[in-house]
Every structure is written in C-alpha cells, then in structure tokens.
Image 1 (tube, rainbow, N blue to C red):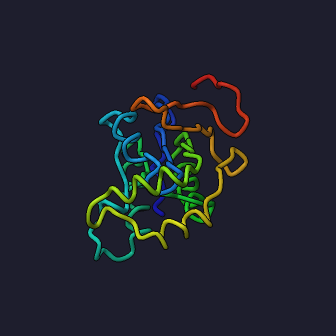
Image 2 (spheres, rainbow, N blue to C red):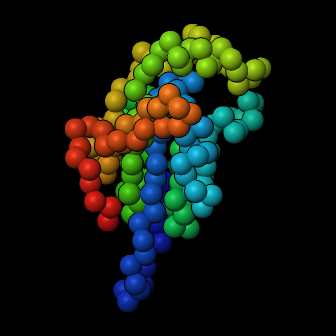
Length: 175
C-alpha cells in the first residue's frame, strides 16, 4: 500500500471520503443497491468487473481502492466481503487515507438469494458450491471490527431497500 500524501500544514481540512464495504451473499441485492444508493462520484470497485482470467484480483482491487481514496474520491466495494479476512485490508486502506469506513450488511436470506442467483444468466450465475462456501464464511460486520458505522440493508418487498443502523447502533449523526 502506498503512503497517502501529507497535506501542507496550512491546508484546509478536506471532507472525509467514504469507503463503503458491501457485505452479503451472492444474490442478496448488493449490486442493485449499489447502483441505486451510491451517486456517480463513487468509484465502484468489484472483482466481478475484472476479466475472468485476471490474476491477482485482490491486489488489483486494493490498488483501485487506494487510487480513488488518494484522489479524495469516495469508493464502494461491491463484493461478498464475507469476513474480516476480506474487509480488514479495506479498513486499513480507509484508515491510511482518512476515509470514513462504513459496512453495508445484507443479512442472509438463503432461499431468496438462491432464487435470484438461479435466475442469472451465463457467467453471472454463481455455482452453488461457491454460494455455500460464502455462506459458511459469512459473518456480520461490527464496529468493533474497525468500521466507523454499520448499516443493515434489507430488500423491502416493494422493489427498494430498507437501510437501518446495524450492530446495535443508534442512528448516528453524520460528521
């Protein structure tokens, strides 16, 4: 990871960009939520957007996240990110660049996620073995993991999403 540039001593403090980390099963609605919830100024980083044959996807993801944060741009990481193994490097990068790191937790709804995955075509469909491997590793993110905030996201049954504070948080005030 590169070093973030140091601001000049008399430089005005810049607004903290957000690093949004989506956490949930395949077919849980993460990409649809990302497309609807995050404005265009957010850099979208998703391993699904890399060519299937791409090597070193984790390294590439981290480079893209760091490049965006270095420019002060907010980032949304749209992957399953099922455990601290995946989100710890993202949190570390966010901290290094002074970002506000927020987890968006999609609690598992296995029957509906499997049905949405089954409706996917071609390479978008995840083999069930991969789905169940993600489910086995999936853990709810907590503020104690290093996130500044955790939001719980559920499909509302009306074509939208219900977003609430997660991890036992009360509604917090934005900085």
